[in-house]
Amino acid sequence: MATKIFIDAGHGGTDPGAIGNGVIEQYVNLNVANELARLLRQGGYSVMQYRTTPTENVLPGKNDDLRNRAAMANDWGADYFISIHTNSSPNPAANGFEAYVYRLGTTAEKLGQSIVDSMVRQLGSKDNGVRQANFAVLRRTRMPAVLLELGYLSNPTEALNLYSPAWQKAAAKAIYDGIYNFVKP
Ligand SMILES: [Zn+2]
Image (cartoon, rainbow, N blue to C red; front, side, top):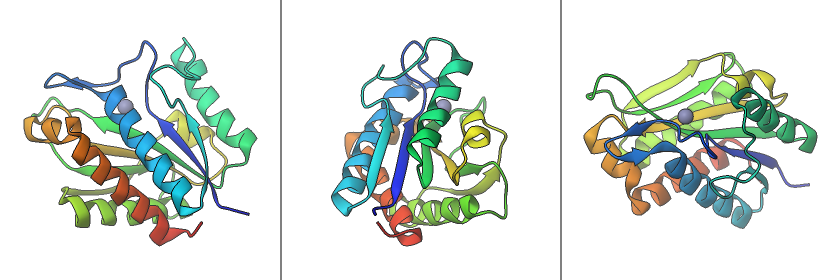
């Protein structure tokens, strides 16, 4: 049976996520998530997505919505959970790619490291490494879960990249390769 990967495009519905330099997070997340899902299916993985559109599956209450994302992945019996986000900082110089996991020293950290390595190698992103965070989707999911922050919308150069369809496709390919290097279909 194929490896089951749940892809969670962060935010959506009435929640835009971060906004920086005129770029809105929820659409960046969605484009990269949809392309990643396409690559994974083509590669032979089994894929389930939370929202393939700006609104699909999104619940009105933020807490209910986050709970719903984890529940869908748990009910499906996903082997891995990948959440796609885009970052923002009060400091416009902040930049780079990072992965968050609920606990360091876990399978999730190894998967996160593989994806970070691939992004740094293929897109030249600054390596912000794998970090620990108590995010709801990481805490509530029962399988190894990684939340990716693709770059900083608050950084003018990265915002241009994050808005570019070519960069979005390249990012999806780098994330795909990071997953593939860690776990085969
Ligand atoms: Zn976000």
